[in-house]
Length: 329
Length: 281
Image (cartoon, rainbow over the protein chains, first blue to last red):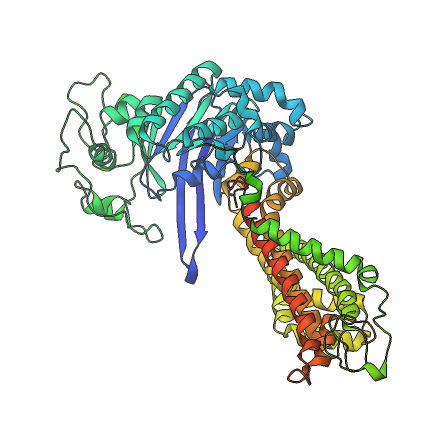
């Protein structure tokens, strides 16, 4: 299976005042196969949105490589990258800010088609605009209206329709449902799941909401301070986490069927990303940290169940396991 | 309820926008029809034996120190004021928006352009206009140019700040990911979204230009004294305002009314141009 998107050692640094440097993304690698949904989860500020923005060239990465369909795209100029915009699109977090208040919905949906040369104008794009409104379950009459006439959920449907306009192979959903009410959130996630099944879309689903990730993701990558802590199938990572951070994150998500377990709950705040701890970035909050963790930075090591974790002392594998775990030296 | 309903239009209070437009239309009409309304009174005709007469039926606003008819002079003066207000508003807004958009969107040019604007801004507007008129000779065109230059920094700063606000909006980033090129983003997203602010600013610039022109004429640095303007009429009346207040009062009332009209227009437009307001303003 050849990957649609391959990200290798991606780095992004921001220069702060007084010569301080914030390493938002510190060597992140992952791949997404055609039609696959990879969820990127983690606390705020862990660099997950920066990765999405790098993929769409809203930020330029400082290191590593991004390959799309086997072609390297991170070094391309703005003009050379344009053809790829037909293949990778984005759904933004804030459905209020991401739609131009002065444009009609028809113009908003036609913009990618016109900009990328697939239509000559909004009139020309109209059949596709109506088709898109059908796809996101919006009435066709919405085309003539302006964003402020719609609710947050409806606006996000419009945002999704815009991302789908040019028939991309991959869409990056940057916290696409975080700003919505709970009931609306479920509708939009279901819509995304349906569209993905209908269109065979691949997605990079950036979120901090594990319940939603569980609903939509095939694979999950957990990030902490700019690095991937654990990555693997959703079943393995969310069902039986091996990295202490994943475990803490899952323990922090309230569940109906089990009380919160204070033993594994994370305490404290994430450290200052501009001055990460030595060795393992998570050691300052890790219940399993030992001396070695302060010295040596753990690398991602394949473990059981098709997942890899970056931890010297991973949580024990689940008692009943079908795949033998690779022991970490 | 019984009886026929009263017509609603008659009862509704006019909005700010309507009031502003009405006042300005009235003054525009006065300016255009000045010769007609003045009824054959010549604003330049000097009648030495009729100096500084108080208002009467024959001379509604009285006469000035040279015996010229003030009614005619104030009416003709409206032409200069409106021309200056409109000219400066248009020139300063167009040029300022252009510079401001470039400074706001093209990062490398921002520093250079804004320091130049800061330099311009550090000179007091009246002083700058006086200096320019002194160098170029006073004419309506030169006065418009001088005041527009003095007003330019305000426009540039507003345009730049508005562009920076808009360019950070998600919908601009969405346009980038949609494949829109920079000129398209500027024309389709940035300009329409700053237009309302610039338009409202233009009305305030217009009002302030009308006053600045009056100030320039008042200090004798503006339009040649043979052309009647509200500013030079008031300047003349200034020394005698305690004994002959009519010379000062009439042009002052018209100046206030015009500035009020322009400001009402600006406020009304601001409310009206908000896409969410629905024109309720």
